[in-house]
Amino acid sequence: MAAMEQAVGPVVGSRRMVDAPTRVLHAVLAVSFFGAWLSAEAEGWRTLHVTLGYTAGAAVLLRLLWAALGPRHARLLPRLRPAWTLPVQVLEAARAGLGRARPAGGVSPAAGPAGATGASGLRLLGALHAATVAALLGATLLTVASGWLNLQGAGGEVAEELHELLGNGMLALVGLHLAGLIAASVHAGHNRLLAMLTGRLPGRGPDLVRRNHAGIALVLLATVAAFWGWRALQAPDEMVVAYEQQHEHHHGAGEAAAPGEED
Ligand code: HEM
Ligand code: HEM
Image (cartoon, rainbow, N blue to C red; front, side, top):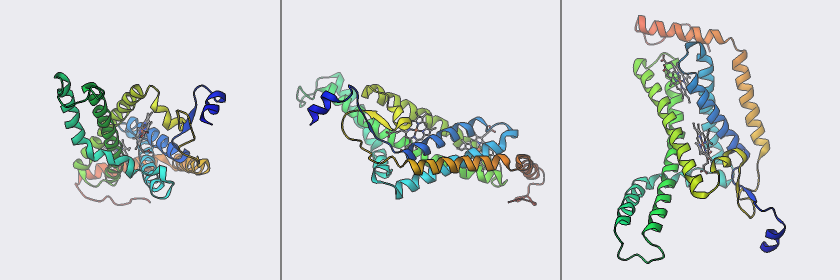
């Protein structure tokens, strides 16, 4: 059977690894994060910034919901578990790196020192990837929460600095995320980044993820579009002015809550 498939099938096959809701939520998170980061500085873009920030937070919450209620392959905990082994993997990779310098005594020629370094390097990469993803999920929620505090005019300078620090820290994490995926792609010999776009990776055999759940993905996309549309139609100036008033108030009289909040 396998031989026949090999004979008739395309030279390079692919199989589905990631379902549509996961990919849509990832894309929404990535686009919203970059948008929020780019629009962070300009006062006039505050509505855009806040809208994209909320969207990023919602994408993470919905991803956690999909992990909890969705199919088994969408679960996050099994994928994040290697994060705990990061310290051990760092030590092991360092030891393997040192071991390469001198011939190892008890190692068989087949699993030579070079092979050991490769394996421990790969485990290190896996642990780093899991830790980065876990940190990205947590950092998004913390960034959104601190941004919300800022918008309320609560927390003062500390919340402002914390929010900025978290936002920029996320950028560093995203850099690590992409660097890790590029390293994994080089190792695997194919572009691993595509898995989150097309949902497929090269390889033969059945799809690892049977159902795409495209309908759920479409509902998610429509919800995001509706939220963005609604925010764009809402008088955007009002939000900016309300924020600036609170801010002046805060700096001027040093009071905690500003009166006349809408919502
Ligand atoms: C724009 C370029 C990006 C690309 C190409 C990309 C690619 C990927 C890929 C291929 C995976 C799956 C890794 C695996 O097999 O385990 C992944 C997972 C993930 N990425 Fe990204 N990513 C990008 C940006 C971002 C950004 C900006 C964030 C967050 C702000 C982010 C957060 C995550 C999270 C939380 C996961 C794991 C959760 C899940 O499976 O849904 N990514 N990414
Ligand atoms: C992924 C989501 C977010 C990221 C990456 C992010 C990032 C940032 C960064 C880097 C700044 C500092 C800009 C500067 O240099 O002054 C900033 C400012 C700000 N953000 Fe966010 N933000 C996010 C979400 C939010 C949310 C959800 C809200 C509100 C609900 C918010 C409200 C604000 C406010 C009010 C400021 C101005 C603080 C000030 O007066 O300096 N942000 N954000």
